[in-house]
Length: 342
Image (cartoon, rainbow, N blue to C red):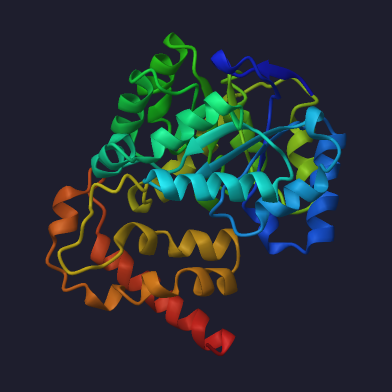
């Protein structure tokens, strides 16, 4: 395992990190086993969020008494100061620590969110104060909207930026990463498998390893999964014409129907929670139908409100047939509910 300096944070992180979503499906003992195995293989960077149920608690238990040996990044989706303070205190408690290495504003993709965060009484006030108090070492931001991510980086307020990056979603390499590098921000790549639609780990990481200053954070839920991905880092990376052809086949198969979660389609005039409903298939594939049904029940309940007015399609930069996809996802959701007896 090699290590990278994560931009202006100065933190020395492993060249691949550990994404904290999948361990929510594991028992605490099994999660601790997988986390410690990754650590023993050289991973020292663990990314989670207040929104990831008991992920923080499991990470805290795995590394109790080892705080100086690991780097924690977590997040809040709260936009107000009081809510962010509550989330931060909860994260500190769950992670069993008195400081967070990187505290990130979670999923800042719309202008209204940014305005709320930076307004008087906004979440940024809490985070800046927490940094002054030593509860937060470095401040980061995550987004799924490329234009917004570039804007956030240019504010000079952040030390890291986390953004989706994989061989299907490549625009960040041309538009976001150069700006981040110029300002010496650490770059963290979420969604290395494009939210679950890339099912070939070898080719996914052949692509990612072409960007050594970009730290991917795949989610792990098994020891075997840890060993598979870390095994790629044991040999030199070489991308050949066959690899490029395979990547292109994935793009051809998935690109036109793939929701990038940019949220330009929102808000729906009829109250459909479009972005999250568009991700139902991915969640069911990545996690399980049971998790998808349980976590997205309220979201999917809004889908029948779609009257196919077409407003969302006029806004979508990828020209996706959104109502058609939503119908397919709702049918899948109903099938999963029936199979699960829910």
